[in-house]
Image (cartoon, rainbow, N blue to C red; front, side, top):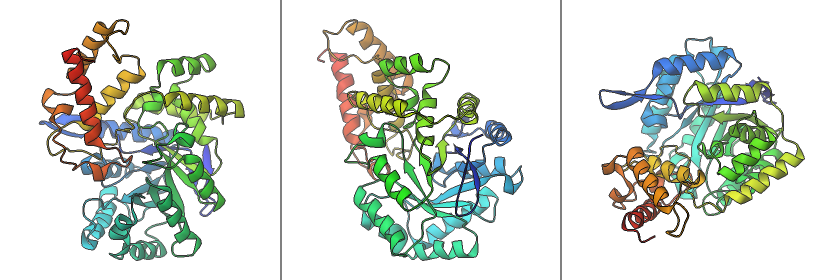
Amino acid sequence: MEYRINPATGDKVSLLGFGCMRWPMIDKDGVQVIDQEAVNEMVDYALEHGVNYFDTSPAYLQGQSEKAAGIALSRHPRDSYFIATKLSNFGDFDKAASLKMYRDSFEQLKTDYFDYYLLHNIGRSMEQFNDRYVNNGLIDFVKAEREAGRIRNLGFSFHGIREMFDHFLKMHDNGEIHWDFCQIQLNYKDWTHADPKRNVNADYLYAELDKREIPMVIMEPLLGGRLANVPEGIAKQMKEREPDKSLASWAFRFCGSFPRVLCILSGMTSMDPLLDNLDTFTHFKPLSDEELDFLERMAKWMEDYPIVNCNYCNYCMPCPWGVDIPSIFRHYNDSVTEGRYPQTQEQKDYKKLKRAYLVSYDRAVETIRQADHCIGCHDCLGHCPQGISIPRELRRISRYIESLKQDTL
């Protein structure tokens, strides 16, 4: 396993981190619950093969993730792994509710300290940041908890606008708060091609943190799996270069090629991606300058594809009207990137593509949970870390599907 050293603490952290946002799920009496047996097996195997960083949150998997992580990890010596969790007070930033969330995390994770603790998903607006952490005194509280040793490293996870990111670093520079680490979205697509309305190019985030010698934990190295399922033409070029390596390995090697990166998170849902990632990180090889240039060309190419910038994190769920937002976006994006996307009636094999799209859509998403059931209540908008205009994208997909059915494309 490739390891990186946290210079401030000496922590020897596995470059591959286990993201606990995508634990395997099973149906139990009509309810989706975490498959604890599968989680235990994956955690055991990961630890045995050198993975020692586990990232979770009270918000993941409708509140089930921390408990599953706690059950699996507590079966091992506490000094054999690092726990990262978050103050995910999106819905209720009342101080009492936030403190309860913080204290509940200790119980769920069966620990008396957090190795890495984050203010979760900040960066959209100053008003939101102040309401969640400043006006209620939580900034002072978590700083005191760090002094007491219950938090060993304090940081934040960032999604948002450049102005906010600069503000958080200014807080660090003027001594208002010392950030021990920062979690950012970094991948070869967002390095210089992030959506400017929703996120900041990762090259800027990296440079500013590197300048201050702040270690980085990387989230969304695969953009919710999209960089493991790239358009056919890009996949062909990658396979010609590395026929025995997965498409995902390119994305992980990109992130790990930057020395200030402490850990790269991967939300592994089964043993197959775990095994593939272990292969990448136990034989880790940074990208050459030529390979970095190649990925830059591939990132530019991807901009031509009309996908929804969804990472399938499920923060938007549950929808109060039952719309299965992530599944709708995933089906649409997969169809585009895999060349199963009917675009015009003059297209070769249009009728075949049309039928395949409509049939696969009905199989992927229950009829009563499809895009046309969105009423535009906007309940989802405040939860999306990518800042996607979810109702607008659902309407676009709904109109597209209707045009297929009516042959008006």
